[in-house]
Length: 387
Image (tube, one colour):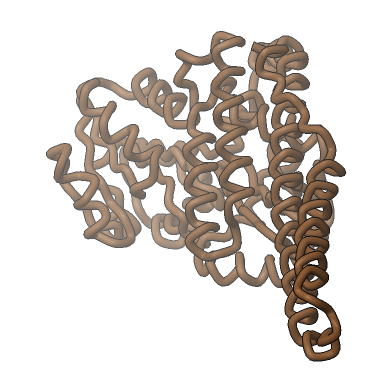
């Protein structure tokens, strides 16, 4: 069984539209509801800084009804999209290495909720493995390009040595910056809606924790705030800061939906940059992605073929096991029925009874043999043809 994908993602869709479909609070309930509505056998939901993606096995993906404008991928196109995404070819920053980890996290959550199983796990593992091979072919294996690394470069190039930076949130991007910024001479503090989570990140690195409420009220003492939380609504607002007069404050808002109101840009002392700015690529960056995509095309097609073959092989195996179980049950019922007819066969001698038992045994053997032989010949994985 192959997955059907439905997605909203940049640059095809505006980030504001993508943000409308980012679900974090109460996600387990949404996963169960999506599976019920679609009738999907298995389902995985992924939300990143620039995309939302539903991977659906069986059922009707459109029954999820996420809204107009979605992109649908199926068959070879679905596998190619997943591979390009895993390899970082679909990312705003070519070679983004965070997607494989995000795919794994999405799979883990779906399995914990009970809406994904062995097929989703096998498909995601296959996609990540082939994505890694694709990275190596394209020379992206050593690249560590992501939104977080771009943010790091922005801070190191735009702020003087020793500047004070508040990191808001405890996700992968803020963890990355919490490790790298102090190495470059920045004074880093950590904040989070749940203070204990901030302490879990800050204390092993020897960083102080600052109350998020204090930052929301007044960011005094900080030269920059990098925020990347899962908050459904902005946590930094114009209403809270409009009466303040402060030195220049740089806000790097890496969250989707945004953690800071765009209206903050009205304040003369606020320099706000959000994901839209990071994703507004230069012509050079766009040409790099186009060049990489062109170079990757034959490898994507070959890898997608391998993934399809494996998915079909798993489907054949499941079908065979299911058919064997049904056949075994049918023959068991037949044998039980013969036993109940023994009284009516009282006229048979032992040799005739033995012949009847042999006929039943032989019939079972021939039926199972016919079942196996009618299965399509397995398709070679393709590894030798596509090293």
